[in-house]
Length: 472
Ligand code: S3P
Image (tube, rainbow, N blue to C red):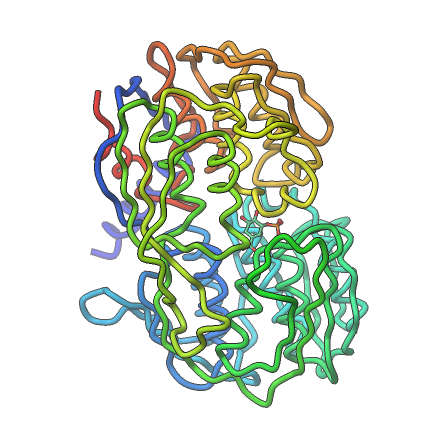
């Protein structure tokens, strides 16, 4: 029996790691149907970590099914946190160990492909009185970590790395020194890392965002778990700068909540429906946090027909001011996209970029169907994601017959182009695989996506749900 389990585990592993899992995609006529999506990945990471540090059990509904979030849960379990599914599987129960209760892990914590897991847990580990190692897969071990090492060292933690990359060996210190830190890059992961370390500091920790506001789920959630946290106007996502500060709490209070559908996953379906005339798509209960909805605004400014209804406050319902809002989205496919205003609507740049960061590959594909094309600038962060997303996007667009210029910090699609079916390479990056799966639906002729199984990093159900709404 034991042997059979191992054979099965190895077989599954080889399937998962097969670099050439090919997905064949035929063009679609339109998108028709309704969907509900798994919980938001970014909120799920935070719910897991903050609940783990709380006193008491938190019950979380609609927790993300992403491999990335599975990695976060596995790391927390290794440090003694109880994680289990409620009978019936509707909610995840996280038995918090309190701010003082994490145990030293016996082996390295494997963050797999997940930058969020590594950067957020690094903030927590900086405040522990034990040593721990964070590691990950080949892609994660290539990604820059100095952006978190520097502030954590300023706070008094010792972090050994492989020249600024993982594995990271973190020697925590308690209490950490409270700092005021202006972030050199607009990154919600870095902000979260410092705020989580701030829970273990000897005074008020301050983070300053000066080059555009990033997603604010951490701020909202820490407030709901009882932390004295101050931030600029939560309703105004367009503020260029923002200052967040928190006082270390005596304890975090466990909290029940429900996580709305992931808007970054919804983006692929919204794009497909907007591109295919005659489409009618409804997506229920999608998270509409103002720091995440720029994709909808941008599409609307290109003439897409997207309505939202039934806005409600979900999640951590006792805190209307800090709560995450959600709503239902309705998309009708139109005859084509074009800027609806005079000026620069064919150009995406500046403070908009951090709020579109995960949607940019999809927007580049959409840009091929916009009259006048589309330019994306100020997005050099894309080169530091799971793969170099500028290079991967340009390569795949060219394979589909698009004339595109590559810039160090973005790309320019010169004009509206009829896409040609092609063999496309995901480069093992989930968002590249999904963006080009949508491109394949609107192309002429069949396409193949190499390494398409990587979609499970954020959205294991992607292909099943896509097939359920595609009409051919
Ligand atoms: C995330 C922040 C973003 C985003 C990532 C999730 C988060 O990364 O790209 O998918 O949950 O905070 P950066 O902080 O590196 O911009």
